[in-house]
Figure 1 (spheres, helix red, strand yellow):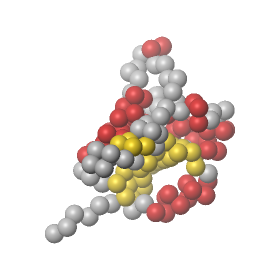
Figure 2 (cartoon, helix red, strand yellow):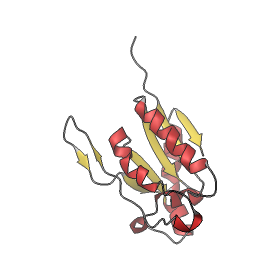
Figure 3 (cartoon, one colour):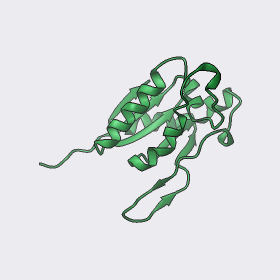
Length: 136
């Protein structure tokens, strides 16, 4: 019996702190990737703050878990998408986001940054081309 690989898209819509949604999403993404499923993430609305490179959590008394996103490439997560309209609405751009590298250890192929800013048409395409869509 051959293994069926599903394409999972995780929509991240909430700010990284103040609720458990962002942390739970990250945990579920890591689990899916560990089971060799094709995992992609899409950051929309306040979810774009999850990838900002200037998170400082000391004053709110929470652990900053954003560095964990930088490890996703090690789990074979190859696609992180960010809605450009959501970035612009919050006064952000690509320079405000962390970079996440990916390397195929078998072929040696490397991508310096798998974070891609997309427009609303691509957001729709992404939702349509994945087998399973989770929203957090």
